[in-house]
Length: 492
Image 1: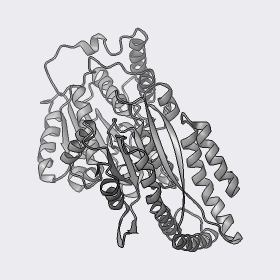
Image 2: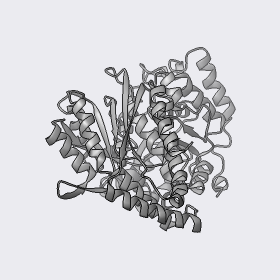
Image 3: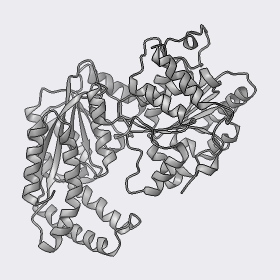
Image 4: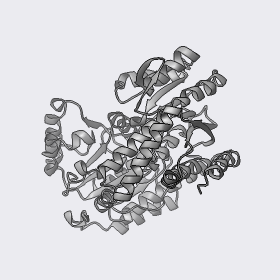
């Protein structure tokens, strides 16, 4: 689906090449952040201004230049923790200085990301207006703010909202009143390619920027095409995880695969599900096969909540009882433990806290925002040793002090493991390197008929493990263990 015709290129009278040259010229003389444009002495808050203590990295400057050259459109594919937000605010500042940008609209998938954006925006002298939660808290004020901008009663307006608020009727009704000089930023933009969201992206806003470490939507080419058509192509430089580690934007890490076997009853369920998956694959292997998707999800949950992972967890953490700053990634499935059936999240929390004596708290989508801040402070003070999370926090969790990750459950979606790895690699003054412990379920012995199906499915998992191992400090040791798995199951 091509959306390129839905809106004209923004501000046709603007010489975008000249804007890019202006920005690049100042960089050439190392004046980009300190030029006369940024030294305008104003007491006005709410107007974009580069912080005095900020020096953008070379790849961030190049990304800004390339976005300008692409006529105010583009997608930045940058590793988690590499400074996408700062780069985007740098673009905002440049547009304000050179063309008089009036409105910045940021759309985030989660509430906690809204608050993180607000903190960064304030560093750039902005007064962000947060539009989320109860409509009565923001709707009338948003209308007033847009009226003031359009009537030149205000110089600049920053709006940060969530995906769910953005698609609401109340917010959508305000979109026609956004001025021509508005920049829309989609944070974790892959979420905006969903069927529910993609048709509501405003056609009247021409300045567009998408941010994501993984803009490609897993198993959804149409959604990916829609995103790229709306926001613009992926711009160079693509800043990979390897680049981020090399440039010290992220810390390096060690990778430790931990192999776990299924129990007898889990093996039976696993075999049955794999047979059914094989039948569905032979019948219809398209992404629209809901039966196949449901079976894959069920099998993924079975693997994610394998009972023997709890034994492996106890052994690992008893050896690491004095460690701190650990995140435990759980699955969203349930498991029977000591006569009770509960979510893995709750069982892991109880095992760590009561059985081992490792001080943890749950950090999930249901954790109130003020409690999250308390938990972060407790981690920093070492009052807590770790947090237990589920997949809903793969995007946006920002606790740089975390330096250990124990992955009890993973999907084959590449976005998930890229996000998770990026979260634990964020730099912090107390962190030299990070450690990732990845629990891998080894498949059971299967009938020859089922084994060919299993090999195809396992190849995807092996790819994820090798991806983790390749960039690790202990790459040789980690890959040696994985090669053993490949040899054992004849999967390459």
